Image (cartoon, rainbow, N blue to C red; front, side):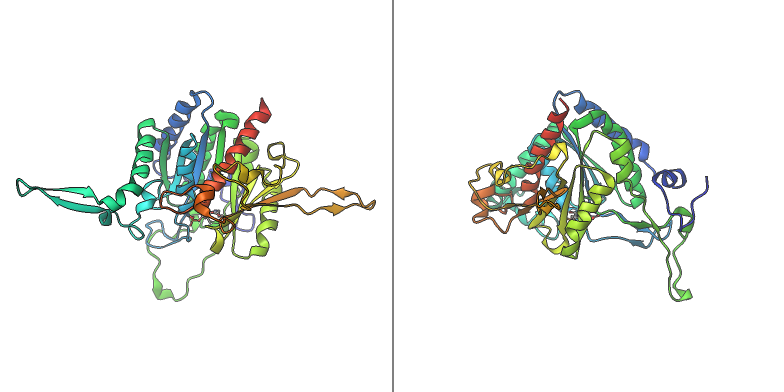
Length: 377
Ligand code: PAZ
């Protein structure tokens, strides 16, 4: 089958029929499959796929230039740590060189690891040893312990992608493996995936030359794979997608539209500049997995909390012709760090001494995922 013309666009099916799988797909798919099978055999163990970082769109097949986006993978790497701490087995599908669980605390730009170390000269000879400076030991210790725990239990599998094509093929492969987990599988799709790409036949083989003046590109739309993922690839998985907007007015309407279009369980909306401080959970009201919690119950479920206003429900009602309340189809719940009166006391400290919104997100998700599992039994 030939590639569709740009005006037709690519369906998910035609995409996978016409675009070549990336090198290494089989090896990575086998590793992910083995990981899923290992944890499937452990009764009650939940497995989450965390996607993280941005995808690239190469302009040349001998790639010198590519389109990219801003995502550093903070959301994904941080969330993966909290999922691990809550007993999940985690497949971390991430952009090459983006932030990773545990090592993210010591990125080369923010907190260079060489700054943690001191040289201790030997008293007897000319040799020296290296130690972590005492002022850094306290913060490094829990990170190292959690890292060793993940290593020794084998509960974290990291797999890399770079291009949007890599991502789509790997997502399809891992979903095929995770489908057998049924409701125990969660999909936490935090990667920033390009909406546009250049199909193989439009990609220049060699470096595009600048002597022709301007460069015009016509890109095709990336197929919306969330739809088959939800409806065909893993009908039982608990699926959380993220929606990023820069115009705050669009956040809720676009999140609702995604729920209605794809039929999954939850959209977490975030605005570019506020994404580290607030997110909104958008769900359908009628969904069995999303029975509305009592106001205030969200924060009560967070360890060590009293009644901080970090969770806020918004539900607008419509009235029918008889003046009776008609419940809206969707509900929203905001999680905000700014509302913490005393962040550290309320939500527990992140390992760097700051409260991280991902801790709150994952604690909320635990409850929802468990309800999703229980609803089947
Ligand atoms: O990687 P990061 O922490 O800098 O950013 C995270 C994010 C904004 C990419 C993520 O929260 C998100 O919204 N992902 C989905 C983006 C989208 O709408 O395609």
